[in-house]
Length: 309
Image 1 (cartoon, rainbow, N blue to C red):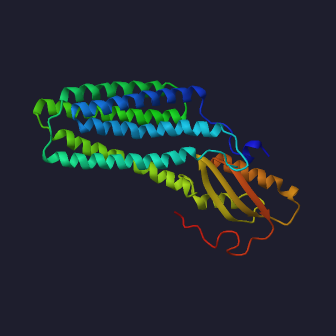
Image 2 (tube, rainbow, N blue to C red):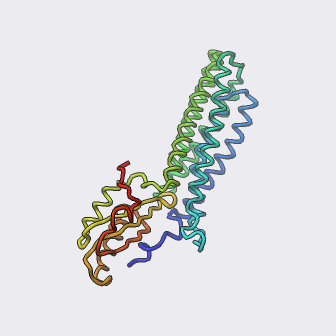
Image 3 (cartoon, helix red, strand yellow):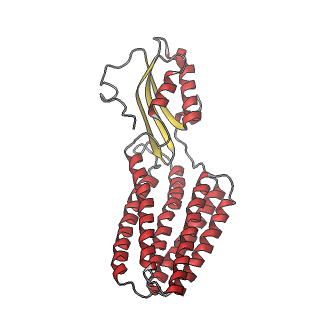
């Protein structure tokens, strides 16, 4: 039985080069976010503040990647037998709540400005938004050249989206400068605030899903159940639980009903089950209990049937 099938990964799957690129992208993004906040206050542009909020919200994804890397490198202890893989999930939960709250305040402020939109320094807005487009676009391309890495791909998509939002703010500043329609700024702010709230709610929903130890996204409970039942030598499966320990780290436990025989006679069943779970469903930690007779109803599965959600 391979070590990989029996234990949680002790290190992060991403390369050192990939993590270095993500860390640099995060540092640049946060520095520009701070600069954009200052520029937003000085230019009286809530659209810049909204764009800064959007940049900060997307920075959470980069923070999670680095947190996951750090957590995966920390050894398990007798008190934390699963290690620290959920540090990133907890960070996502609290940060998404914070970002959603700040976006709501921004939305309320923009609604108030719709009645009497103040004059905005459009040239400052255009200069800062243009710089944001160049900075985020350049960092996104830098990450894109980092190789085939899922975390780099996710970071690239976030920063590429940031560059497009900055381009939209630039266009809003240009419209305001040409037409004098000051209402464009609060209207654009409202759109950005809603966009950030949607992104934050998605992160919040996903973090709650993991913390509730729900079946990981992309896995079908009944499909996994049927796959285990289809293994030669398995007469039945019950008390199946699948959950996500950390970011895309899947764990599973189940009872397999087999013929009444010595444990050594079923070694191939265990090996095949763990191989199939690892290769087909990315389950890196599987605990399988063998028994010759199934548990009585309610004894092993809390008396509940899978709801198929």
